[in-house]
Length: 455
Image (cartoon, rainbow, N blue to C red; front, side, top):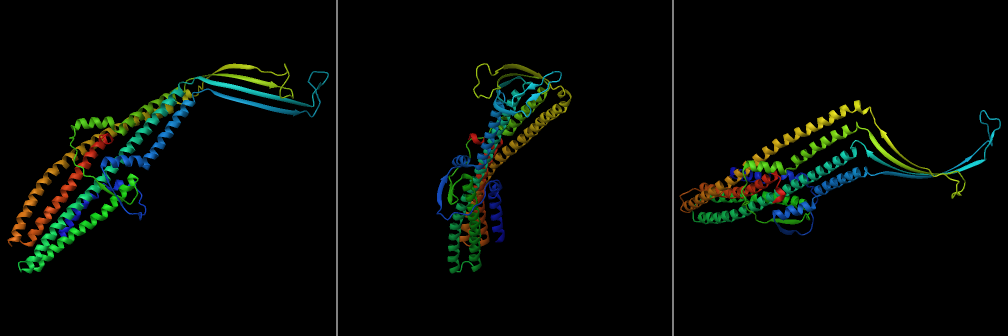
């Protein structure tokens, strides 16, 4: 009977374990709480909302957005006038009281000391700098938008990880229900076999075969219980719930909405996918960088206004007509002509970056088309598998009913009876897994089209 257990285990857990890796990479396991477990029934939509609200990954993304906004505000501040003010006091002692001016007969008499108060207030405004400030604001604005798109993409990833974990837990829970149902069925068969054995209708080996079948199903149940605890714990972490919370995924069926045509889905993806929109922005950013480098070739014009206060007396508050307060206004036109030959390679680099952004965008467009087509085909295949498995269950149930009748009448062997029951058991589990896989395939298709959060 090892082939029965191997078939059951590999068929079930290959599907159950699919998709765990993404959730396991995001969470960090901590020691389980000793508190009593709280059972919480939750839907997929509620889980996604709760997980997004509590996601540490998204909180980190929000910090990047705030940082980009701060840089944008700094770029706007650079367009404001600059101003400075200073006030200084100086005291000088002359070591010599006389100073001979060349060509003069008599030396000048110097004071023994000199004091001065000097104050300055100046304001400067850049009138024209080749639109460099304008392009700086455009660049930081584009970087802010890119940061927001990155956060939206992270939000899609978090939502999908939560949905994936919910479906994995749902698979385990549904499979455990099937295991319990089949244990009850096997118990009935075992009880009947024991009665037949006591009447001499079957051998002891037939009873042992039913007992072995029950043990194999119990082993499957033990594995499901263990994996269910792992998935439940990981999902608690994702949702920001206490680790002791026992989650029960409310029953959810397939979406009643049928996907649109493949071409329509691809158009939706190219419109909504963050990476496509991001590279549109990166292309614009590269073009802005080209303009910035070229603007550096142009002259700059700035205006300044200054007022000086000069008090050569030793009094902090001078008497009338003993201080100077000149006011000056000026304009400066400057041109770094060396930029004409030193900036050409910078322009070439910026143009290469723009071309690179366009190439990468085209690569992403092809990848998105491929991804949408694959997920579209996988979803259709999942729906078809459900139809086939529903028919196979009907056939397996009828076969099980016939062989049960034959076994009761001692026409079929115990091996045939167990094989029929195992086939029904496997078909029931496969159907539950297929339903969950189809539901997850639907959300995978939504993620591929960039609309997973719109559901």
